[in-house]
Length: 273
Ligand SMILES: Nc1ncnc2c1ncn2[C@@H]1O[C@H](COP(=O)(O)OP(=O)(O)O)[C@@H](O)[C@H]1O
Ligand SMILES: [Mg+2]
Image 1 (tube, rainbow, N blue to C red):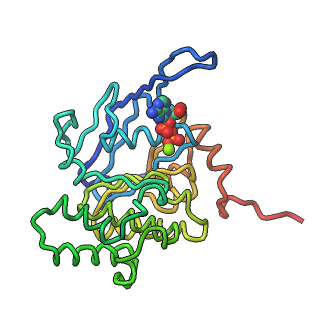
Image 2 (tube, rainbow, N blue to C red):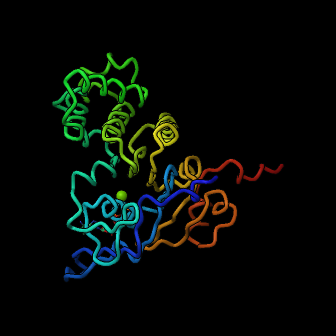
Image 3 (cartoon, protein in one colour):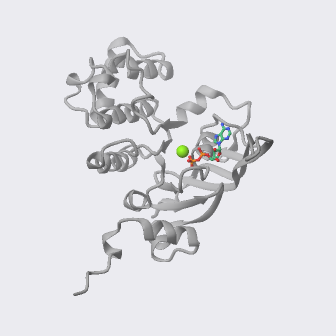
């Protein structure tokens, strides 16, 4: 059974999002950041959302996280339209975001215990202090910050970028979400540890059966980790399909451009004498 045989958890249906902006001459104009974007996330799959900077990736992710309301179109969670009446806390329990910058997204004045404990308590108010503590240790183990006792009392400032991103992922997992929207989670990390974070996302989806939207401008990493891939260009979804199929036979010129620019060893021709 492939992931697409499983139910759709989160979907964007023809979502358009416009912002007030200025044109070259400073006149007010509407910026169409997403233009009729549709996208499905099935249970337990990793979908990569690929596109250059400014193509609308973060905007659609923010709509999926219901931080932004679509100007047109609809977001659906397990088939139910997400509206202004959808309870925020209940939605946050299902759909979590992980951001690009692990330095900005964690409060550097708080310990890891505080950062994770706070989320655990909000979503599981009935847990005792000891149960919260146990849960924090489980989360640290899950993201391979082990032994967890070495991390729980530390401040984000004493952690590397990769370790901080693991804490951000642990915080997202603290609510047992169905979906994680990971917006360029590795782009600020050292190249040497990016693969570790991608492997962590893959392990989490297997162990926790979460669906992950992996947003990136890097098609090589998208290929590495995703089951399906969607390509955005200038606010439009120009191509979508199973990752290997899409890479073997890209239909849109922009996808070909991304592939040609990506360092993929199998595409490098051997040097001729
Ligand atoms: N809050 C905003 N106000 C005005 N324009 C915005 C806002 N957020 C994003 N945009 C514009 O929408 C477009 C898409 O941005 P974004 O979704 O951040 O792209 P990406 O994440 O792919 O780099 C860009 O042209 C950007 O300038
Ligand atoms: Mg972005």
